[in-house]
Length: 226
Image (tube, rainbow, N blue to C red; front, side, top):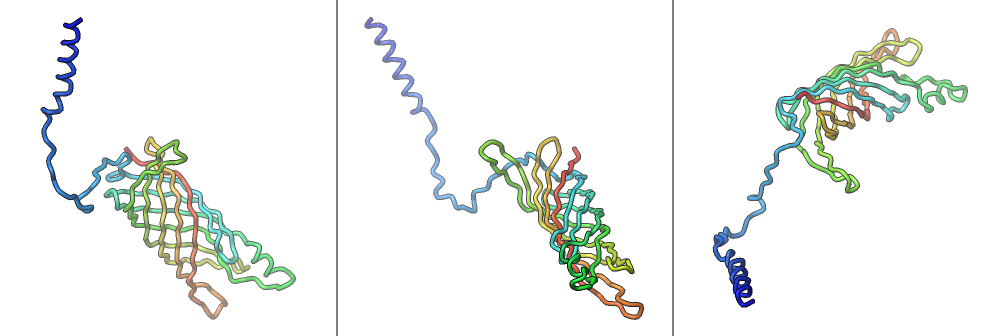
């Protein structure tokens, strides 16, 4: 019994004696906030990859029309925060309730509205934010926030009976989010504002320039190359 107690005491002494052999901590002083940097390997990198997407869009903010549309996109990401994207969009504007009311018997006026037919845009895409979000405490999603700006051309047609066509140079601006869902797929949502400088034939003798905004909400899926 005495021998067993001596053995137990010796083991406890060795156990508590190990921390004394550890290296003493080094005092580095006060660390400034700007000295703290988090280095993280991105789970879903974009640099050097291409991205192909299909999207549905709607332009619900026009005064006289409501426009459903669809778009195809192709992007090349040169860096994590910089890429270039081409966008091919097509749609068809419908008369909204306000337009129908104005051309009805109460007013008998047809507004000089033009319907969207399609556009071709070339954008620069800047993605300064990459982050993670916790959804309902159940799943972590990685996402980025991006801003776009570019130039292109928009094709529209008069709703009035002359059906005159307008080809308008366009400045496109936008902001969006890309949510990575795994296996190279992303869910994308974007708010675009395409600003058109549109020349409209008012009569046979006069023409006028208009500045028009096609504000669209775009939702779709894309696939990043390996």
